[in-house]
Length: 87
Length: 190
Image (tube, rainbow over all chains, first blue to last red; front, side, top):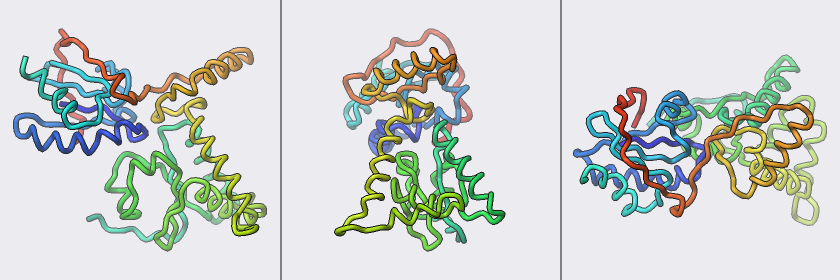
């Protein structure tokens, strides 16, 4: 799972500790990575990132799901991160 | 634990992802160099939390983006309006009036209070002047439309819209599975 974020984004800040918690829960099955859209503008553009935070789930290099601005709670982020892989 | 760098001069950290902050940062840099000897160091915040902690272990990158920080040589930090007052005290062309911010009347500092409020307003309206990392406040949108309209009247091209930041769970949206095959980014970092 890749989180497209920015340090100037308050919601990204709120979701940060939740993501760290979820990362521990889903490893080693899933890895969570972070992309700073201010630094990686081209990359954010190529994935058509409309805002931050956006969580994009990949399986075998294919995008299998995407959630924009999830609620900063463990349950919602965990669902967002795991659900695309269950279907 | 990163090694703490000793700095002989105050350091102003500015948000280099924000056009208005960048302009102010560069203005401070130019003003500080006018006297020949630079009185304050100006640095972009950047995107490396560890590098920032090497300047001051209490410095948090999220805080640095949220409000202006000046790192003092004694290891303390000044934030917001206090940081602005410190910058003005350090610049040769503004230090003549910066004494006023320390002036106390009946237990409070009126000029500092005005500066704090002014800073808070400027920080809030940054997206109007171009701030790539600030997102777009819903409250500011009507003001933004008026600003854009006024700019077009004077032939000024508006700044490109910054990427919005999703701010509440009600805005959470799910998208269908993308049909295209896309390579996973190598440049992402955990």
